[in-house]
Image (cartoon, rainbow, N blue to C red; front, side, top):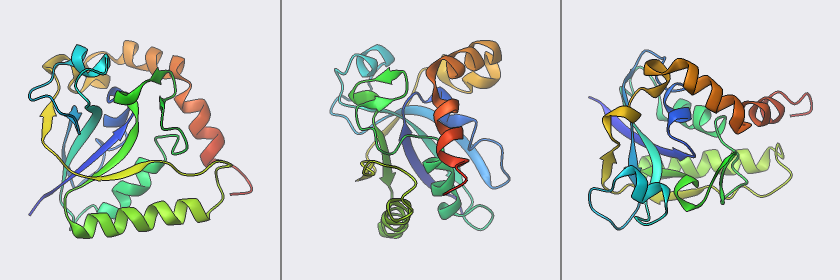
Length: 176
C-alpha cells in the first residue's frame, strides 16, 4: 500500500531528483498546492496570483522507504530559516513547507522540525510551515522530470541558484 508525501522547497525542478532515486519511491510529480485557484498554471503560480507553492508529490511505499527518511531528505534540500523563497527563487510561491496527509505524518513532521531546531545547525529559527495537504495540481508536462529531460539546463540553473553551496555548508559542518 502506497502513501503520498508533499513537500515545497523552492523550485520544484530541484526537489524531484533527491527523492527520485530510491527503491520504494514510486513517483515524484512536480506541481502546485496550497492556493486558492483551481487548476493553476505555471505563470499564475510563479507570479503569486494563485496562492500556490511549487511542490513535489511523492508516492512511496512506507514498508520500503519511511516517511521519516523522506523528511530527512527534505530538510537537507532547503534553507528552513528562509520563508521568503528559496535561494535565487524569491516570493511566496517558493516558500518551503511540509504538507501532511494524516495525523501520523503531522506528528513525524513536527518531531523532525523540533529535532532540527534543537540541533542548533542553523543560526536562525526554523520557519518552515507544516500544513494540511490540499489538492495537488500536477505541473505542465515540460516541468515533469526536468532534470532528466534537460540535464544541462537543470545543472546550470541549480548551480546558479546557490542551493548546493548553501546545502554543502549547512550539512557538512564539522560542528553539527
